[in-house]
Length: 272
View (cartoon, one colour):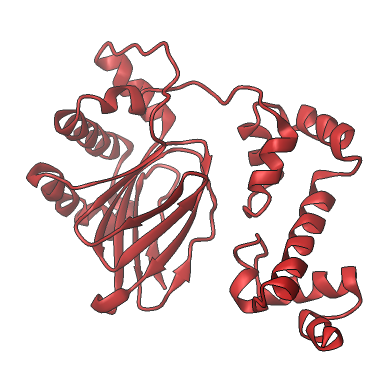
């Protein structure tokens, strides 16, 4: 897997792979605009599945959980370029252009769009930044980010509310949220953020509701779901461990045996 990841100062990511690969990060902290050069990206979130095909763009709103599957498909190679819109850059742009948005964005959090000729050319212009990230300065990066914002607003002026929504998640029902999102592999801090709580408040409310810590509950919930999928739906461990939030198959096997006394394979054998 060849991947150039952004430094603290940079906001551009290039991904290239010749094999199917799951994205590791499952929390989206900043707005992202991704352009698919070859292959496909399948994005899974609470609203469904979004398929980003060759020569298409995906715009994802910040503060959401999402999983991504990178597929080489018929191109035999996966290539994608992403632009990360950091909040500080968007606020700087908004101040320079007197943009003031005082309401929370309520539209779609993820959208697949077909780029026009300007946006396609823009991604071509990012090649020097992708190949030489150490040579780009903060001012150079911000200039390219500003250019991308201009092109997006020219493409669809309705994206103004999307891009400049700086509101944070409000306090929501913690129990309901956890039941729907336990399978995302993300730090506890991100669960707290999306429920509109500080980490301390999240832990306090969590123990009050579930009578256990978030880490223990997440592990137990994922294992219970795995047990049901294996025994009632004949799912294989290799096909479900990533879906349930486990980092690798070895970790899943170890955790499963600690809870049930046997490995998933042994559990199936005993059932028969």
